[in-house]
Length: 210
Ligand SMILES: Cc1cc2nc3c(=O)[nH]c(=O)nc-3n(C[C@H](O)[C@H](O)[C@H](O)COP(=O)(O)O)c2cc1C
Image 1: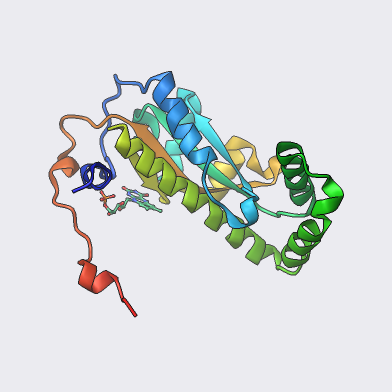
Image 2: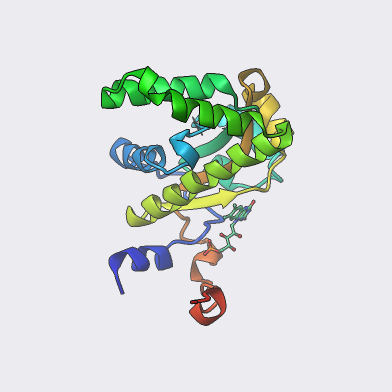
């Protein structure tokens, strides 16, 4: 078995965290890089990732997160917030980034820019929100894998009230929407869930090879 698959077998969605253990700055940086390097449609990365350390804010979030203790007890809380109404400004910023990073004049990217603006402009507000939210899950997946490689625990969570999260975090003003969150830290010795056998579909059931 590859060490990568071993790491994925080791990981589980921790339910109880050791509140006394914090992840190091170096490990936090590795996880941030894994998130930053995530693939996204067109490369647009239409989201922000908010890392909440502040205990008071985390208490408030837990109250609207079905009281899930991971929200307050893990070392760090990542919130993947998609752009609620992605538009031309995001495309323009991205085009500037490509131009500067690759030393390509922005005019040479006009076709790409127009294409993205055309596709995005043709989406309803709901479709835009769904599309940008989907992109955050790719980043979430990278976080889970990177944390597992570092033997750091992580808990992906959708069990929270997004509207309340948005209000507490001031996302409405920023045009952001809390799509999915992940608590990151170290499992508690007494977290029973770490002993549960992993339940997954077999390869035969999961894959269709044509
Ligand atoms: C997008 C997503 C949302 C999830 N939301 C929650 C949640 O709100 N609370 C929770 O305890 N677990 C949550 N989970 C954890 C899953 O239940 C868990 O990943 C699944 O049962 C597989 O088990 P494992 O990750 O421990 O291997 C979520 C997982 C994902 C990927």
